[in-house]
Length: 311
Image (tube, one colour):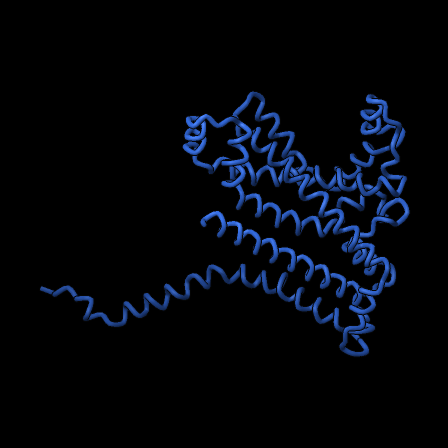
């Protein structure tokens, strides 16, 4: 009668199993890693090199030398400085206002009120709509003569505003559209964060006699702080790349009098007509550095905020 082999008598099976267990995750991740290297990592590295190539010719791949000439040219360009200024103003206006509105909307949707499904559909509609189509719709709504925005203003006695034809109103128009555009994603994240809050906190607060506003600011907002910070970081990165909102509103121009240059529009213009890829790449790297710095600052603030809360 054959005797069953003990584990100690099969020394090759376990090492082979361990080798396969180490290789298997790599095999699963290989397609994803190849895609990241080819379509993400390589383009980023290539852009860095192009930004350092002076007088770079896209067709011949020829350049005069490596240096910082493209960065000096971009940082000394008045349109790029204007683009940086406009982009910062856009971000500083859109992100706080959109976050506050989204927080109020998410809190309302979390109350399980009547017609909640209708409100959710209305708020999430921009996420499933073409950006170009939405931009053209907003262009029509901002029309000075027949737009619905000026019609609503006329109901309260305000004269028609040249949202898309006057320089002083072009930034407010872009900000309004930008706020509306990022609300759905922000509301979804904040609503998910609200639904993860333990209801026992609210029950205990009501037992202690706390009212709605006090509960909101003392319980909801602190517990939702990590989600708020996440949405702020993601929306800040997205807002710094403002272009899709600008292009359809002003028929492909940077505002009615080219007063609304943004960094991405500046990059787009450098690559149009006679391409100046070196300057476009250096402008992209400056934008990357600004976004990275602000993201790190926000993460540092979040870490200290958490540390203070634990203390």
